[in-house]
Length: 165
Image (cartoon, rainbow, N blue to C red; front, top):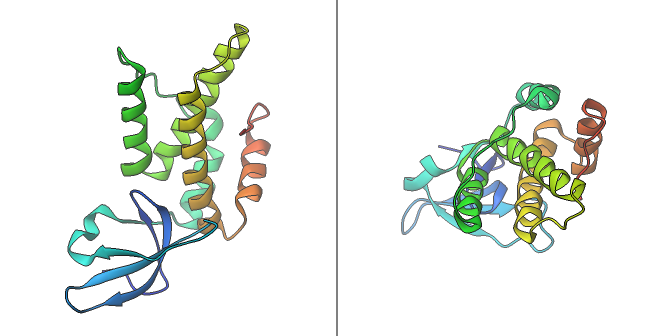
């Protein structure tokens, strides 16, 4: 069971802090999303805590940033853009921070490939890239105790071609 003051990752909201644990009428975590403009408290039943996960440790975050240049991209393709979008959104929501970083790398490459052919990338590519970037940068920022912009700078120092829109 998580304790008040701990950071966790909620599948839909991303990084949250456990504000308090309410006992009545059923045990419920009261969560506050981190890094949003107007955070609203979220009620989340303790009985479903298996869907939550702890934020990366500092060492895990540093290792993840260090291995970014060698990280493989996800070559998943499907017969329709909607099915691909669903696949990658599920990875962002239910996967680890590493999965979100891999999605970022995958879509940065896909967007660069499309632009290299003088075409405009599909809006869905930009949307997935933005979601994965926000999710991974916020978690890494909490783990390292720095801002998301500082995390972006760490990634840029690892890979010269790294940039997020």
